[in-house]
Image 1 (cartoon, one colour):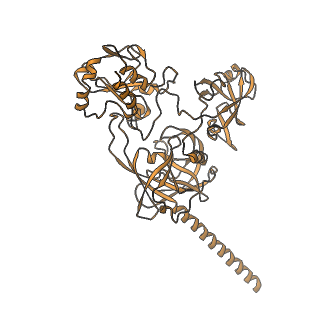
Image 2 (cartoon, helix red, strand yellow):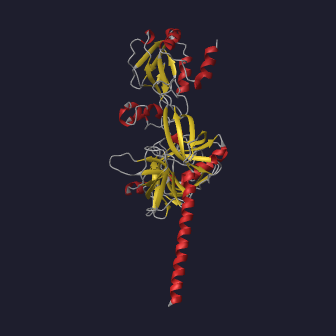
Image 3 (cartoon, helix red, strand yellow):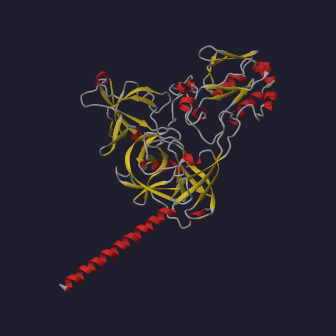
Length: 505
């Protein structure tokens, strides 16, 4: 009996020692994670797309990041977008260090920072990128949200994984959804499971009908960007350059001669100049992509019993990779191989949002002309969906063609004698110059500057016109620029063309 009691005591002591050892190990790993989470201070100075030769007032912002291999800091692109000054700060330390952007993917809302003084990384163990958690698996969110200066840690569970439109630049990529509290300042912070990065916090759900929902960039997207960054050249995600339609309608499947049990995505348009041109055609049905079966709702199974948009199969590829598709063309099965090409981000007449660049503009006769892009549309604020001009919003659904790749907008008029009668014209989409259609913004500038007529006639699709006297437009330019304190009549990206034309006899 006595020996049995001794055995029980020994077992209890061993169990206690093991528990203490495990707790110490967990505490050590926990501290490593904490030390690798960084606070980022950003001075953001974005351009003013309403007055494209000016910058908006600087704003101070903060975000979070995590140290990864190679003395790099992984964070969100929107934390550093349009930043003119960046600093980083270690957990629990007062000193701030100067940093710069080493690589950025606005589409994936990810950026990699470097620190000028590499002693910043002393004592920090870089975090590794892990695997996507399973549904209902507990994860921790590390970061520096508003309301305090110290590191905040919240917990939640993974509730859903599927393709979402990323809020920053509109990329359509895989995203994880968690119910952990996410607030301003958390952006760029790591989502941790098993002491590894399983996501990067990017946005919270601000809708009135959903509470405590946040989204993160998953490991597959993170790894894609890290590989893309290896050569320091941004290639982004590949794109087949087509538009598809679901085949949930039995009549639609039958009309395209699909057999029982067959499903896929119906191709409705193939863009000129895309990787698919000449290989895929409207009416083709994509049955599989790299051995992923495409369902009638255009989804694929990316892991057991979990589905997302078929774009996931393309998102795993890099520029130059071979993509194999099985298709049905008029009922006949074929295999098509396509070499992955860089994505053009979108094929709309409205240019995708861009960051860290001066807006393009051109002034003639006191009229300010700009290309139509998402930067201009979003200048109407968070409610741009309802406040931006209806013509701008509807143009987002118009596809580019070889004859027209951009839309030109007469943004506003700087009132002067030369433009009398048009002083209140603004946000006007122009279709032609002296009867000649406009292809893009640079060709528009060339059309205006090469005009030999006494008048310049600008027309829209409904036939409305603005007519400017050529001689008066050119002679009044210096006075208009001085009156409205405009430094140059055109943006720097147009300067070489403009100067060459000005110096020509």
